[in-house]
Image (cartoon, rainbow, N blue to C red; front, side):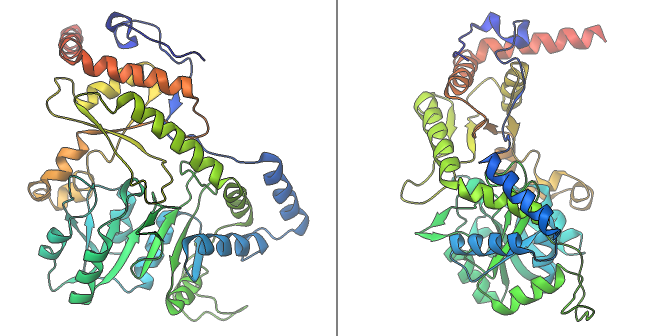
Length: 409
């Protein structure tokens, strides 16, 4: 396509034709070399070994562990189950401190096991847990800290490690955003007691659906392997409580195919992020989440933060983009503490989470990945610039539009 430029009157939300004929999603799956994937799948079918630690699972785990710089990778059927098993294997109970600014699975993985997620506020600059507030949230019931590397940008790892040591707490990281990202030159995945990756279809490296726990603790890794396979330690010997959390061979084949193209995926993401930066960095009223050029990052997330100086709201911008078939997303709206069951159980939580509440109203994620072309990004950036530079006029028109719709009811 050729980049499209519009006037305010031509916006689809005001009756114009959408820029895109089909919906352009934030996270279209990367596939990699389809022929190589199909070769692997055919080999799996010929072997008739579809799950239970086949050759592709073992190869995938070895390559992920090598890339993360850890001794052990335990692949799982999805990231949520990986979190749940890691939480149980670490013996967490009582209360665990966690951000509310995260995907709800982070909190659910705790609550599912009757562990109370204690929501802690974030640093408004990094969007990650504020270590000072973490320390204030510790009680006699606290057994662990569950940090989240949001956008693949590392948590305050060293302060959290010091707090965990001081209070004898377990430290687990949700690294769902952070595969192939680094902190002080060391890969995320190698910190705390363990870290958990997601390889969901929307992640830049996917296994269709999958996840993994990575750790340097050999005893923990052995327990994780038991727990993901019903507690089996042999053909018919069960020695621990477990569940079915295994990744299958075809999922691992997809992961290996993605690993073959990992550098290409990251290069595309980086090129797209740099284009967004060039076209939006000088736009008053919005901030594009930046990445440390001295560190490795997967550049999977293109995140705009709208300032409250604008008349137009984040939700109004999202509505404008959706009308153009740009399926921008609110992250992580409205915050875990405002979702059930937490909203009912902790109705006052928002009072202690001012930065989380502000951020959930301010951020929007834009499309990137191998399914997006440079001309599409140019069109998206034009729409954002148009909306922001004419924010007063557009806000008033949308307000009148909503009023007329209400009267029509």
